[in-house]
Image 1 (cartoon, one colour):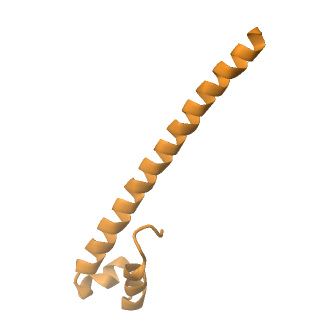
Image 2 (tube, rainbow, N blue to C red; image 1 turned 90 degrees about the vertical axis):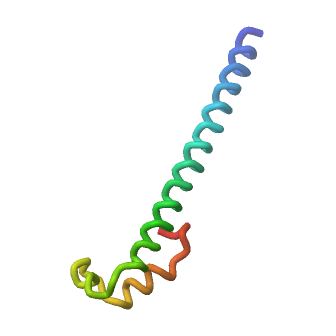
Length: 72
């Protein structure tokens, strides 16, 4: 009977850890998506004369700007 109680207690904590991991995962994804949105918006606002300083050409920048925020 004691072993069953311990197993249930362990499962309960295991579920908590699983939920916590999911929350951390979701939060980290939201942070990444916000960063992607912000940096692509900033890239869109850059003047063309700075493209060479970044080592990018117009086609690469347009390709990056077409990506949705959830895509890395």
